[in-house]
Length: 165
Image (cartoon, rainbow, N blue to C red; front, side, top):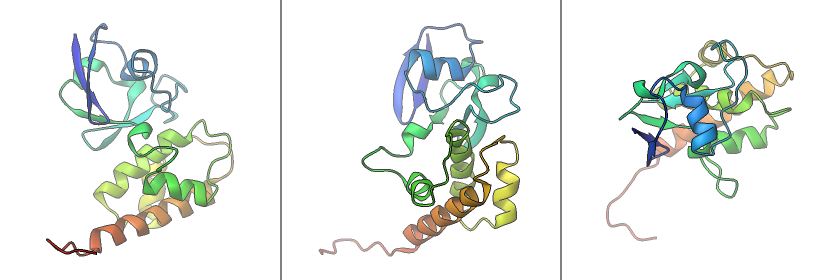
């Protein structure tokens, strides 16, 4: 048994330790956001976050992630309550076919968690490993910038103890 923590929830998986994380997420845990694209780590469709790092799940054996936090697109928010990045992609209409978008969003999330003041060149560099043929690149950049603004604003809101509304 391999113990995995995905989106804050503990799971025990009975699979070969060399099984790619992507297969476990999709087949065993029924999380379908990460996609199988190339199986070679060249397209980015399978990207998830492992310990805060954007990682190709198609190349990552589950034995190497035991005890490390894994975050998938499902962990960023829900349809009823999308996270800042998800909301920004919706508002900017940055999704066309949607196949590559979960991976792009996870890599953007990893970037923004480390650097909520990322420049356009930082965003472009971070998203470089992803293949997208839909032509929504300008809207994707705009969505990541929008999410960055929201995340920065949330960090600067003063928190006061004992204050009542």
